[in-house]
Every structure is written in structure tokens, then in C-alpha cells.
Length: 217
Image (cartoon, rainbow, N blue to C red):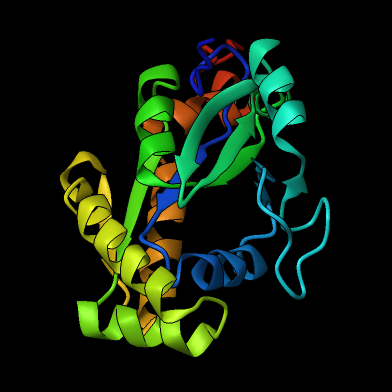
């Protein structure tokens, strides 16, 4: 299934944000959504259980493995990936409807999902968030107090693999100072909205009036 963010009448942007676990992706996304209320966050499906404070339909759609597999077989997912032993996926049906309406959408996914989206969604803006160091990443994972030491080690090893794909992305943000990193993310969003192709679609009526031949008399 191919979705295009440049289809006739669709001036919305699709933003794809990826980062290693503990890289600060979710915190940055939440801060961005507060600044830019015109962006809608795509809620992913996952087979993992909810963590403390997570709620169905707000953080994820939590489903069991058979339900996930059935949805996958029906072609309901744009992308899917196995991450740390659990499945994650993006709803193609919901995303198609949003893009067709010209809505800005943000996908918070891992590099595997981003690679699938890159092939299927021409024109999407891909952003990778890097931690300042592996030591800082480890400290963040420990500070979350959500995983035992062996799982943290596995996540750090996975982070090394994920960061090897940073060159596949359009933009890279170093999350060393949170406020500055959110500023950088906001700048990317605003610049993407101002590309000529999107502005011509968004303001087609105004442009037609501006370019109309001058009336005589």
C-alpha cells in the first residue's frame, strides 16, 4: 500500500520520528504536540502490555498476538516491526484518511518501521533523535526504573544497531539539552510545512487570485 503526501488536495505533512529506547523521543514528541496542536499523533498498535500510567487509545492500542496477526493479514498496517520481543504497527486505514484530508501526522516508530514508511510514503519527513552518549542513554534507561539490568543491557546493544541507521534519515537531532532539541524539532516541522509544493496546495485559492490576469477598464 502506497500513501502519498503530495496527492491532489493533500497539503499535510507526515513526520516520522525514530530514536533508540531511552533517547527521549516520547518526551520530545509530547513537547512538540503542545507547541504545534495542528499535528495528530498516530497511535500505534502493540502486543506488549501497558506500562504504569499508559492508557488504551492514548499511548497505544494494546492487542494480543492473534489479533495483531489477523490485522496484519487483512492488510490493515502500513508498517510493522518486532522490537524487544513485542510487535508494533501503524494503522494504514487511519493514516490514509488523515493524509487524504491534508492533516499533518506524526509517527513515533523505530528505524525498522521508518524504513518501511520510507518506501511506501514518498514525501514523508524522517527525523532521528540521538542521545549525547551511550553513558547518558544508560542513565536514562536506569532512571525510568521500568526494566531490570539484563533488559537494559539488551536495549543498549539494540541502541547501537539502531544508531547505525541514522544516515538514512533526513534530519538528525542531538538530544543533549532538551529545550534546544525541542526547538530544533519545531524548526524542522515549520520548515517542512513551508515547502513550495505544500504551500501551493494549501493556498491554491489565494494563489489563483494573485495570479489572475488584471481586469481591464
